[in-house]
Image (cartoon, rainbow, N blue to C red; front, side, top):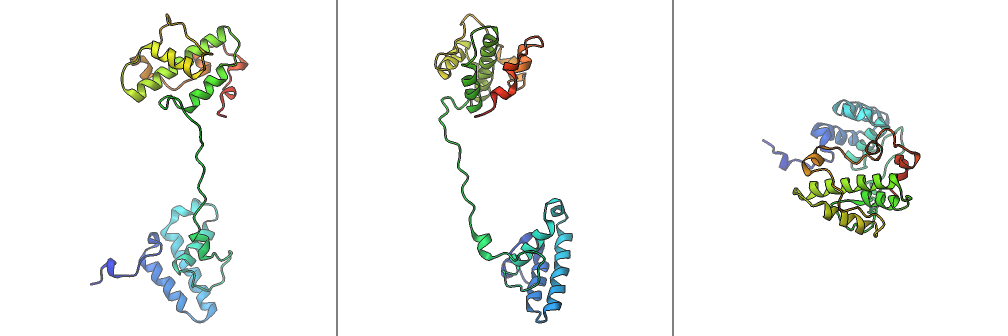
Length: 211
């Protein structure tokens, strides 16, 4: 009895050992026309074994690439697509740079800081007061989700003032929603918080797009 640990390593395990054996046999065929016919037959088998790949663009192209990979790029056949090289698959992709930027309070996140920056530009008036309350409410909710505990409104008002550089200050006599009510609410929604009669162009979501 042969154990898998004693057999050659599978190049692409999704296709199984039988496909790999067929590819190895195809490499040994000396007549090119017969080798081409064998390769096309293997491609059909590979497609049947992985029907989910048919939803991927260039499905057949991917199968031919896999065929060459399984053969360790030794198979010499007439592919309908450019023949891939071993270097193509060995090259590591470039690292995607992670956005850099300090977040003063991580439990509030970067988006709320961007919203606060936009809110600072509003003229004093009813709209700005409503917006400050909406932002403060979201700060309290984020705090509760992160800390799983209660928090005083005074702490939220202090954090809002710090994040806005003193531009957004709340009257400490105001009261935000209770913790139990906040956990049940959905995410921050500027327009619905203003009410149907107080919507304005200034409060459209496009003004709060992330920088």
